Image (tube, rainbow, N blue to C red; front, side):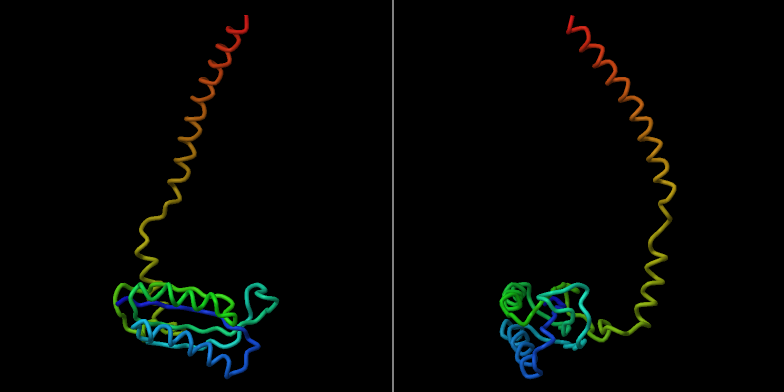
Length: 160
């Protein structure tokens, strides 16, 4: 089983009961397809980056679950046809089940350590390489201009 994450935005004007029904419907889709929900996070009502269906706010949710790849199509179908869902995205986190505690949003200690390690793994800077490429392009362009001039001379000979 693989580990997936789905983040979706619900209509902020829904009552608490309707929000729970929509969430339960999505969770039931996962469990009915032999998936296991590992984490459900309610991020609450937040401002949207842009207007969606004439609304500027949305109710955000995050689900982390273990499932086979065959679960994603029916889940996204349900998300697409459910009118309360504004937007959604599903991402494969890993090819195997992973420790959910390491995936919780808001744990800044782990993310800072990861960032320090990833900066050192990048290798040497590539800035000097761009300048060399520009010089090569200039040399190539200079050679091409001579060829174009030769073609123009040939055209002039044929007009006589």
